[in-house]
Length: 289
Image 1: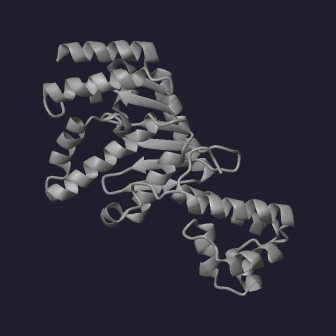
Image 2: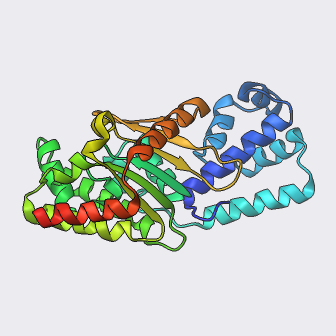
């Protein structure tokens, strides 16, 4: 397992391992493996998709059909025991499961297990750096039709997601922010001053690189569509890309799409201020308030 795992991501990693064993044994599809295992394709899909641990009967069949030797069987059984012993993460509780879609909950798990996060936030401050006041001002407008309980849950979740920055073994966060996002006075001058101060503090953390795309960058300074790329530990853990839309987050793990977003990030970073100049620009904008 990777260094930053929880019960959800442990299941995902275990499912990936079962998929590798299946393919390595010559079963190109889940259906062909299920036929040999004498079980439903859904059962294979659930365990490979990280939705459940295999029961002992299915696990023994997989070991036999996939040709897994005794030492590797012992390693796999130990991984199951370790994963099942992990505490459920904060988002995998009744309140959050009722509130967020299964896709969003999966994103929370991936975010926590990522080794490196690349984020372009578009026309607002990256969520991982937002203050409570900034978040509340955003949702007061964007979610004004929702109940107060709904808005509180959204705010609470966004703040809890920020814990990855200060935990032991935090991810490396590389962020580019449009200068326009720093000038918009979200929530009023006091809220925005606090937000800019928090950005400056985050930018000075050893695991954070924050760079501002200035107005002088021209067309690049108008590129407001936000996206993120998550990299995971180990050579077998594929990266994913997330594109934020007005209705949902679109997730892609196809190599071509991930690399395309990496290219977009690199293009923005190429015209952004250095981390040092970005920090100076943050200070100047804060003083203007």
